[in-house]
Image (tube, rainbow, N blue to C red):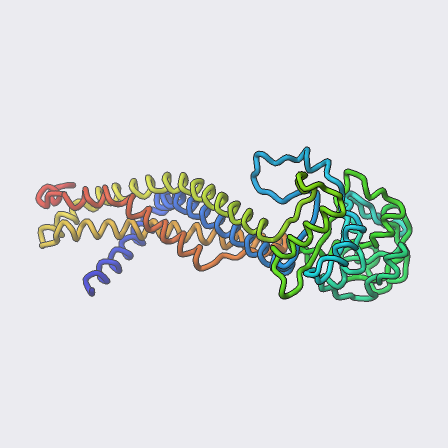
Length: 418
């Protein structure tokens, strides 16, 4: 055990000595390893971070609900029949009311219509390319919302189509730096004057969040008063939440029965609506994560291959420079395996140093992105260990031939080498 510790410590010293005495050569040799490890660890870190942010968003949404839409959720489906889904009817308020009345497993339900590329104005301030979402009063019961000032519209206001709007924090801030004073004032949304009745607290713009800092919410019946909700360019969504003791599958069966009855579909006709659930998203994203990880690994592998040649080259140079030293060690009783292990350890140490350089570059990148874009990235110990382990393996592979060559040197010939 002590002998192994001595070998590691001695070869670590020799490796550092080699790096210091040949700085440029060593840096260029390790750069390939550093870039390869950087690619692999950076991709793993990005995928893990995106996965965590997505999972956090999905968990906030919950999993005990069904989204009824024209378009089924799908990932990488070459046979996605978009032309068929395009012609499907849009979900309606009448369908929402029947689901609430007839689906026993329904705890709550809401209908929403999102319109993109809309403008919101107040006096001379204008914000373009915003999404406006029309919802019912049940939306407030199905989403956690906290207000800086004001409230959400109630069922009477929504049913009568009152021109009211609830704004996310960032939207409100752009319209008036004093967001509390904005409540009670009028703004123009979708070319209609509406009264601001609530400003939401700042929550961030998380993935899949139904309420974020750029939220603009109006009443469904208010939208209906000036917009044809049967327009094929729109897509209404019915969100149905299951009761605590009802499974998603039970809920889907009941919803299918009501929807088919409301749309008067014959038994031989297929559903002309999609029932989307969280498990579809999670399965699709998991497959996507795997593909990105594999792609990133192979990209990094190409860089590591170049780095491996660099490590092999520096080890051959090291063997040539220390040929006489190897001969003396063998003459004093060192075994071939000792010389083999010595140079293998040196190759591994050099490669791991390159790997640590790559990990350090990822850490710097993580900090820059976190500050510049406010997007949290997570460089985990697991990914660091993967990077270091891969670099150690590359060092082992790259050092085998030079180490074997050194171990087979004849001591007499080696000592005579000048």
